[in-house]
Image (cartoon, rainbow, N blue to C red):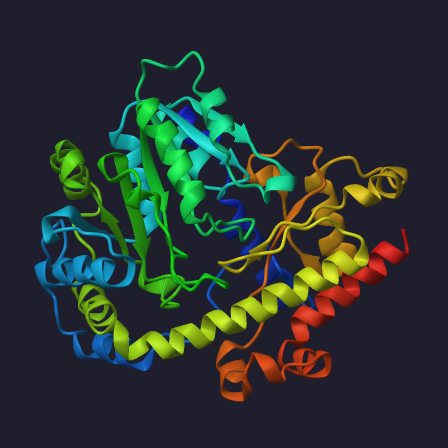
Length: 423
């Protein structure tokens, strides 16, 4: 039988982040010792009370409402008001099987060119390609910590002035660890308002902010045009639960029926036990606050340790401010790498994997040119539960203790440094 496949799908490859995770698991299964800087899965256990809620509701076998369990939607709205001073009603909240799926549904629903700052998370572009949507990648600058600048956004809109446009803004950012502050978001909001841009603000890392401790959202400055997404996977470390939230303001209420119809014809509803567990996460957040704040302090230490090590090796790397990623580049080693026949980032990362035992992703997976020698690093290859039990507080951390608590991170840096020294 000859099978015909949708060309929009046949041209896609597996998500880069999931692909590197599978590759590392296979190599480790073959006995290879690999430091896994490639996959951004939260390092800590899910809070026990949330796990308990999942177990207690395992008997729930009824379909939930497509938009989500009403009590959960109320809890999510209250959480965003309490934690971020963002006002939503329960009818503004949509519950889906991960924020990734909800973002895909919204990209599918909305017309317009998709504007993606480079670098940005790997899946936005492929999701738009499945819809046949035009994608406009906006280069950002290392000197500005790869944060989108108002003039860059304005320039990208030239020739599109009378069209609706979509902007994906990930804050805190994967892959750079950058965090947009209030004044930066306010300036971007002015451009969005002027240029008829609908913003999808991916705020899945909202609670993992190293320095300010208070997340800022572009929705505060552009409430009439911003859709916010979040979920359980990062702060609550419940990626496997697959529960995301999307908040649509009243000014964009025309989208709600269309989104609800898409949800009903695709995944129907998120599983009932998971929604009940999420209700505990959002409604009782105060119970978990201290635990999650300690987790963020540990992520900050791990990220800043890697940053220090990378800079000392001669890499160019913005200092991370949130999430659990760094975006170093090896441009200072371009000559030595080209002498070894390495001209492309993807080839370089494969060389690092098989010659240095360090798994990273190339910048080209994040909308950079193929010849850029940047990589994305995730700082989560450590035993979060063990580290938290032994954590003495940031002020007590020294190099020797960092190596003891984060042996894989230290080893990855050592192997990377040895590799560079042999070039």
